Amino acid sequence: MTIENIREQFPITRHYNFLNHAAIAPLSRPAVEALRAYADEQSEYAYLQGKCYDGIEKVRQSAARL
Image (cartoon, rainbow, N blue to C red; front, side):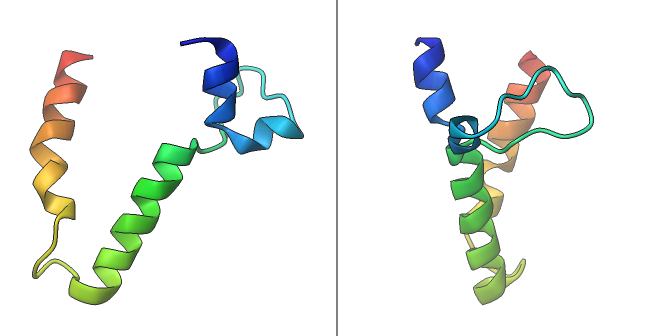
């Protein structure tokens, strides 16, 4: 993966350059897509049903590996 590939995931970099700012950061396209999917699911099912909870253990395991 090149820096250009990574920058493509952050559309805001077409207009701005973020330099190690710990308080705020732009969202990547995959993060935006995940948030949209979660919001759509919550508007339809809340916690009663849905796929968003299926990935919780995977996220926990990934965080533990970090």
